[in-house]
Length: 110
Image (cartoon, rainbow, N blue to C red):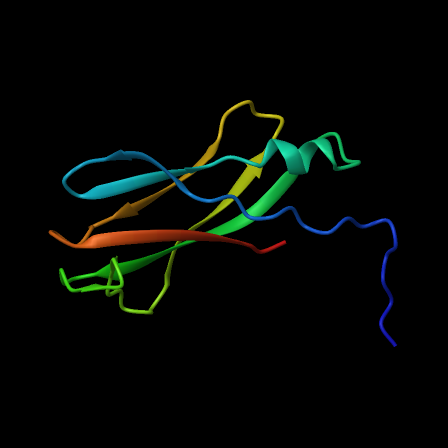
């Protein structure tokens, strides 16, 4: 059988990546832990590992008011988000595809 530690909490919901900055060659997104999730947690210092992924659209085709994306998500970076640092974690995508739209998502990996 599987042994489970009853004292472990479930991982916090992954945050939505927020646009932070961009240059001609990179895009940076920020990850902030949800304050509502933190307030309901029994842990005082929370550190979560997340994987930031990107999906790229190279066309201007609209389907139901949304751009047609590739369906292929690529990992940009693995980051550590913590409520003890006082600032959000960030991840940067380098060598962006010119004139393309980029969609980011985040998933918990711990």
